[in-house]
Length: 158
Image 1 (cartoon, one colour):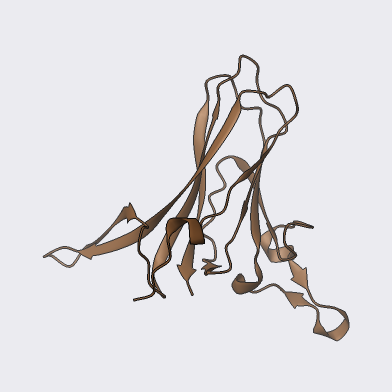
Image 2 (cartoon, rainbow, N blue to C red):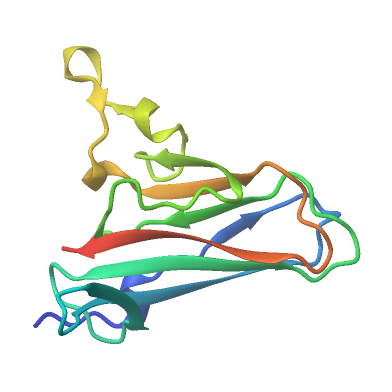
């Protein structure tokens, strides 16, 4: 079994908000998805610490955010790099906070998933899951004082 320490497959999330949003905090977590089949054949999923992961296992990257300030935070974006050790799982990024966009150029540009194009000339094509380097969540509404939430995506360990 290949072992990656959490720090090897986790990256810090970037929080972008205007200066007035001094109280916005964000914390990233990484968990291993464990699927268990019950006696009656149903499958249930739980999260476990990702202290050891092996190729082919599914992990969940999450950002827990909170506005600890006294003012609403406008124009909030959360950006999470996708480590080289994993591949993004299609359609797994939550969108409850607003717009979800992706980058295939190390965070240089972002686009909705179906508009993420890479290559040049006759080699231009929609980016594959393994081409995605970052996920960005741009909040549709201000984050009220005291409000908190979570955004996440799934990935498969290479």
